[in-house]
Image (cartoon, rainbow, N blue to C red):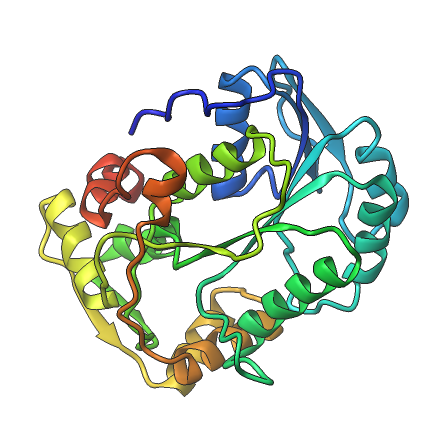
Length: 294
């Protein structure tokens, strides 16, 4: 999928800090910013291979000293909060408020703005992070993303040994290509706003899919007969723990699979920000088929 053209009003001299830069989405954001000629600084927890034109800073978002150093000379921040607890983010938000960059925060489409409490711990943290940023006066631009297509990489190990993907039965969702989310984020980061966006941008793919449909589409791309096997919550929990996932993350994922409501919401916000429609999961599967072996 090609990158979008340079956004209108792009500030070529922008200095942008990307958090979560080593992750599936963060890497895509860094690549696009660099291609657009922005000065990019990535914040990573572990040293990565050096890239020409991209400054890499090793640090943790929960370490105020590291955050303060990473923010020096920065105009904008792409923020991904990696923890299932918003309490450690208070120091981060204080550092952001002191440095006063533009903040683009990656959140979740599952947030219910009318609910006193969100459906599960993952969505609850996103809601709390949005509130923290707003309360600090940062006036963030919020990108609420649906399920990222890149989450399917979590099936890689199962598909290397068989044709069955098993896991909890989660709510159907408008799966969105992480490359589209990255393009949307870059469009916002590189465009000067005299006024902040008061409403979140809700980023979805073009169709609502269940896990079984995603697996079938991936199978078509791989030319294999794949199927999805639903596991009861207890079995899904045991499998994820046996795979080495942290217990608190497993419990959050199980809660999300049980309590997150189904939705058929599809928006055109990707197209509004990037100038082109969101891509399909089927195309994502074709583009990434080689990653799944066999």
